[in-house]
Length: 136
Image (tube, rainbow, N blue to C red; front, side):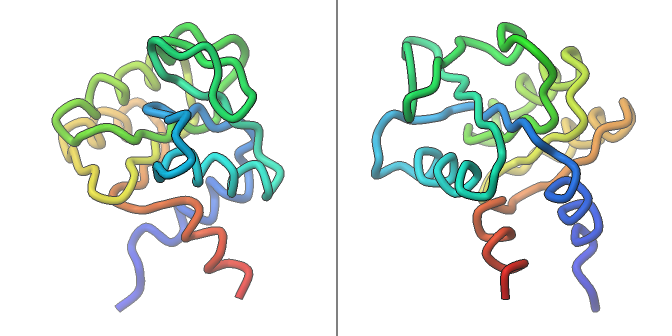
């Protein structure tokens, strides 16, 4: 049986240019920090969303998705599942094209809201892993 998210993952990775990374950490040991680096290596623009941080990986950080200037293609959520829904709602509000909930982040109700609003949704996956998979 195939991966039901494969087409969505491929569509996002083929068409997106800007990833807003919610929960971006300035700590190089954190997954969000490393994933931002992988996204950049693959040519994506990354925008960290992290209240209380001025910058992450040399990029200006914003306290919320709503405060990110310019269009956002993907809101990539590195937050606990219980908090993910608020960021999904922000993605819908700003007109993002997709929401990507990282490994271990699952909120089916928020995902349903995003799909209903016309966004592509990926749940419990990592774009860095998916990008590596595509290079094989």
